[in-house]
Image (tube, rainbow, N blue to C red; front, top):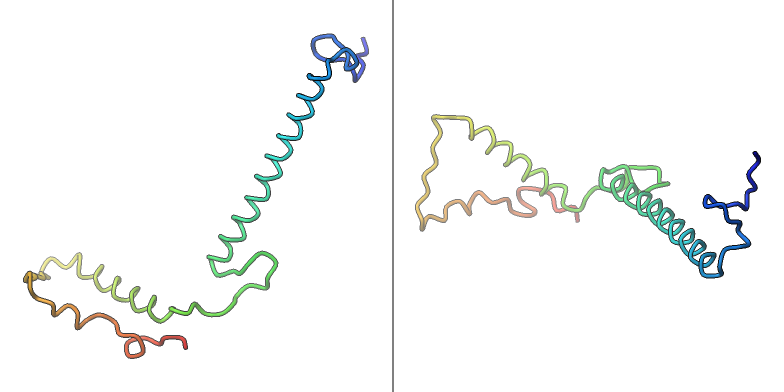
Length: 119
């Protein structure tokens, strides 16, 4: 048997639907379409932010871009973290700190002296 495109699953036709059912169907389709569209836009926007954060640049750009303004400081902190990581597994290495000892402040990186400021 051939089923008409206007026949619903319950056997009724589109013409026999009430105006409220038609409005509800339309509202449902619009809502689902808007949610799918927003999800696509959010995925596009998030992808752009991830690519920009990874240093590739914004979507549609030719990549690269300028150096981070605090790149020297970040490299210094990365080096210090690597040094601390190497000391962690050294079982002969002990650092005991006095509560009032502030000599650790001498080892802090200083802008312009220990790393370039980028200006």
